[in-house]
View 1: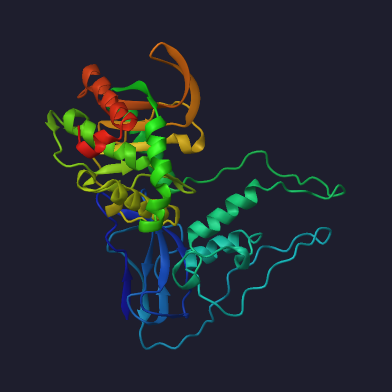
View 2: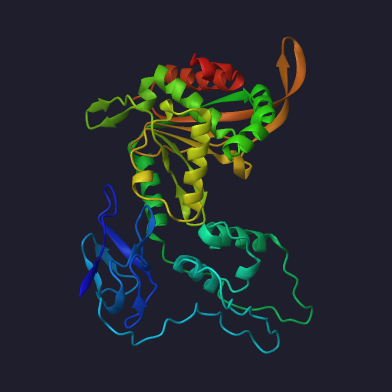
Length: 400
């Protein structure tokens, strides 16, 4: 027998919850095939089969909590399958008065990951044949299905006039996922332990937008990535962090730890919650390399494939609430960091310039900071440097 064990879950994570078994005892398995999905307070991950054979036993059921190294089950490399893998479960049949067609599964084609099949099974209104696949060999990814779900959710549903309104409970109690519970705990911990203040400024995006408009097609054609604004702000933040090192530092007991490296967390909203993957050594990367890394990490976040290593150890965070339409907010610090930069939507506003009122594309930016280590002078100067760099992108090239 070959044991299936809980792998290392990453820095500071010691346990996980069994979210779903993809196989049942008696079914054949292939080496490296996903067997079980684990959910931690930071990430969802799949445990693959260590050997080909038959799943002989399942030692821990769905919903149970397990520690690193715990045995989840056994594989018999020489076993004979006694159970046939069932297709993804279909939704319960609707009432006869309102039948709904159910798309038959494709007879052939690329095999999608179990996590994708789970999403499709839970959302039978999505026909996988109609979802553009971006995965390897034409496979669907979680991001593909979630995108289709978002589109379906935005389409207005038209019910027959004679259909009676469904009744149900007015409240529903749902247990928090470990990720959502961890987000709640860490954000409250941030408020309880840090002396959080926020300072604001506004940025004239004229030059930045003009530079992006001039080169975005060239960048996409040459490098295959879309040039956004996040890269400008990450580069600007690094420049400001070099000048104001307190913002890149952290408190450890009665000591201050100054970081001489710049690992910038980029907040990404997903269906499961907010995650913050980290762009390592951002000071050593070009603008194009930063944008490429952000795009890679954001896709992995949406597909639920981020590793613990990709979300650990950031020194400072940049969050863009503007993608959701936020005009102004006070972002909350991601402990043990001491600062977070919040971007917001860009909109045309009248501003005074050289004695004249002109219309300019303006963005409010916010720096939330821990007043225990960062004073007003440092916080205001930091945000002013970010403003100067974004309003005059040449500063990013000259690092001034």
